[in-house]
Image 1 (cartoon, each protein chain N blue to C red):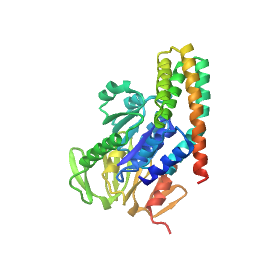
Image 2 (cartoon, each protein chain N blue to C red; image 1 turned 90 degrees about the vertical axis):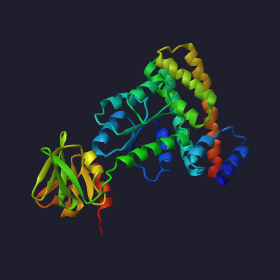
Image 3 (cartoon, each protein chain N blue to C red; image 1 turned 180 degrees about the horizontal axis):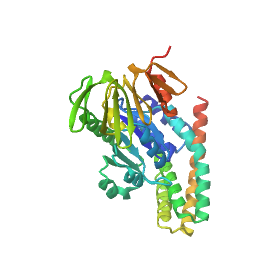
Image 4 (spheres, chains in turn orange, yellow; image 1 turned 60 degrees about the vertical axis):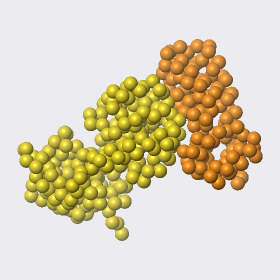
Length: 131
Length: 227
């Protein structure tokens, strides 16, 4: 409970919209676990987005499906419903082999959202690094 | 209860691993990034429960289940709700959609634990019965020197007898005390009491020299008493 409050404080102090409730719940409020996961997301998201973009451009349906699926998991772990829905739709586009302009548009929106998320993750990790 | 986590996504494996750490009776034996890797792990390890993702590159979790002849308990953890029918057909223990709800997941693990404990033999002693030619032979643990996998059979060696019986290494490993018996190779389980020496990836047991598999070395040295 105390740890949970600490995390809330971290969010309040920096006005971050990063939702860590799921990770805190899974980790039993263990902040080390949360940081480990965020550090992974921070390094994984950029390459994941680059790979997904490439697959969308090349219209590789199966790859789009798998990569969007993976990105959807990240969105889920960070409780980001908008991003989760966007990735779900891109995944379905891949599954139905219907990669088109709307897929691109959904990706662009999701990409911006992800970048914002990455910046927030970085800010959070900086705060925790500085104690 | 030995558990294998199969998921191509690192974060998902970490989440599941963290959740399993809340159950002290569960040991994570291996984590696999693909179904192919998991199938190999299943050949090497006695796994009681698989936490299995479905959407993975190469071979999906559903396809993997179809390759297993005698599958352990399986909890499917997936980001997709559309596989429920497949899951039902494969008689999986549970089907959980990501992001995994902590309580829901732990309830499923508890069901697996209960099932596992119920499947343990009621009569426990320092012996087991081995069926050979229609007769059940009582074999004391202390008399077993080693057990060898032979295709669909296993051969249990004592100092003066051998019992060839239709079974799997997984099945016999589960029935033997972990303090005395250890798997040293995909095809060999040894009784530590009968080991004379260990050298250069070999366990010497009387006239027998049995190979120690690379992936088993660490666990072997953790188990035996080394000064």
